[in-house]
Length: 133
Image (cartoon, rainbow, N blue to C red):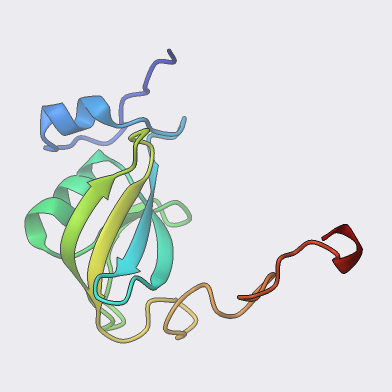
């Protein structure tokens, strides 16, 4: 079993939840935002303990910006708010799934989702060459 690094920023996240999280070496866990009613995957952000605490207690998604080194609440500057409907850990406790009600675009490019611009394999395509099927 590997040790879990402690977050470098202070947090008031519930100790039981914090103890379960398996963070990256920089103290972060990936957080997938998914539209609660359609299941559409909207974006991936990063959370440390405090960002998760704020997400759980405010009803708005808070992320840690790796590039800016600061917290950001989705929609505070863009108006494209994510209202939290549910939050779950995956089976390994190393990824957070946040089901949200997305208002406006989820992607910083202005697109509804971050996952529609560069599709590598389309629905119905197996990815296996026909000769190998």
